[in-house]
Image (cartoon, rainbow, N blue to C red; front, side, top):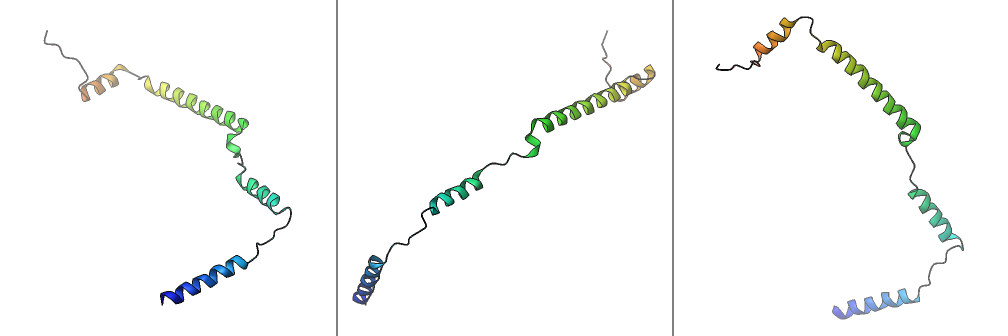
Length: 98
């Protein structure tokens, strides 16, 4: 059994030795390298362009300014009693023993 496997293996090795190398076109590797480079080229997305970045930053700045203006107008109380009620509700007054 072992001898049969050995003979079969030797036949396969001889057939590999007698085979010829495949031949390619002259410019096969040049075309292959060109295709590989095309696949590896990085395409810059549109949101990394300076015009888009600057305009989006300006929009965000404008939104922040609007929100801050709205917040400041609602922060000023109409009367002092609202602040006192808030302080009493959350026990924010400082009590001193004196």
